[in-house]
Length: 379
Image 1 (cartoon, rainbow, N blue to C red):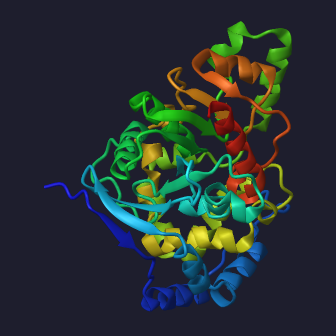
Image 2 (cartoon, rainbow, N blue to C red):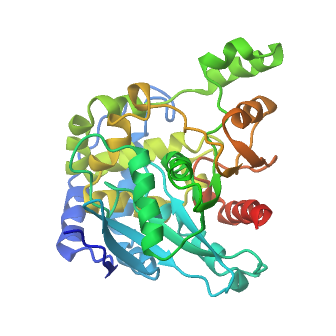
């Protein structure tokens, strides 16, 4: 029998788990430095050593845990899986329900700086015309949500789970927002329940040209395409986690320093506009995210989007849809707008917004302002 109850939840990591983590960090055997400059061969050993020691001796998990527990949290079973979520209701009477979906390798922590701005603008000196009842679920296999028990889960499945969640919370009409993995889920929500969705706001990922678009490009667009090819670099986690996630997760699940190196490497690649990863994501927020992966042992289970296939070798850009209006934080060139409008009804395409991949963590005020601007156009 399905259990539709919504149960209160608090994060309470056992002290034995913290003690085990500290002992493992203290026993870390670091690799010998390889020839090369700075990050040329990956995370520099001296930086990793310093960050590992900070995690062990200065980072205060209990303080972070207490801060996270300030947000009302719950668990409910959907499609046989326990789903963890934050639910922060706004005091404003006309608030719009809004569900936020995090990315990979992130968690619900991606939005901790924006939740208050969205839910209670009055206390942050913002006008109250646009406020939100905020729901932030953990994607299955991430943090405190149960992992898929069988192969084959797709972002469309998560989208249907989120529609069920919002219905269970009593929300008939609502907005959806996400970036990275979340950008896939929210577009699928619009496809699954267009009558429920007011609008889809994503951080980016639409209008990206592919080789199939080359024949339709003007000379100027072809030049832009060639430049885009030069920007694509780094460790391709889509291929890696599509092929052998169980192999690599053996190390990430046994060594916290190994997990730290892997996730810091990816966060650094996602911080392409910053001189240093910690210029984009502050250190304690980064370590809170990594600690959640460690304590919940989800390095392996969070890889399902790649091995179940977002496309060839685990990757394809998010699917478009013309059922619900779409807005994006990142905007882009005229080429990208032309391609985005081919598959979406674009009503919000700002110019000048800046930031790295996980903009909610880096620039919460700007991210919130753009979400408010988009949904303000639809009200």
